[in-house]
Length: 219
Image (cartoon, rainbow, N blue to C red; front, side, top):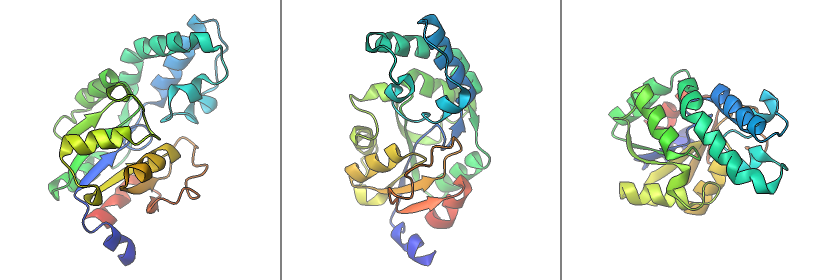
């Protein structure tokens, strides 16, 4: 543990993923996805199938459905999601307490998520988290989302942050790959959505069982 703490000794900026890391909005995502599939006359997916792709680009969720309908799927998904995804969002146990401790310790906190910015801002407002984050990035703020590093670079520029003093905290391989490509440290949190495949093989700098464990290494 001491060696791991040393690795993060200079970290003062923390970029969080959202779904699966800070919040569970899976019930809303399932409702929005199947609502979109229904309007397009496509077969619904089981909750288990949809949960596996939470935190990944919409292409993963859409799968091998007709390519011509993909943009319409995204439009309907976001339209339905304006209400159901935002209302479904719940913080995981200990997240607010842990973010408060990290902020009180002087860390700058930020968010980088594939969620569209409208959903992101509405969730932050609904949860009363406006004062936690020094910078945020939704999927429509950039041309390429994770695993591309563009969102990380977007946040680093917004914070005026040094890469050597920044860590990404997320629950998917996409988070890890984006952080690696951007040249920053990465801490993995085991996913609540059963999409842990490849997490260990992706070799994050640290892999934790729970979000609350962050304080053991960053404070």
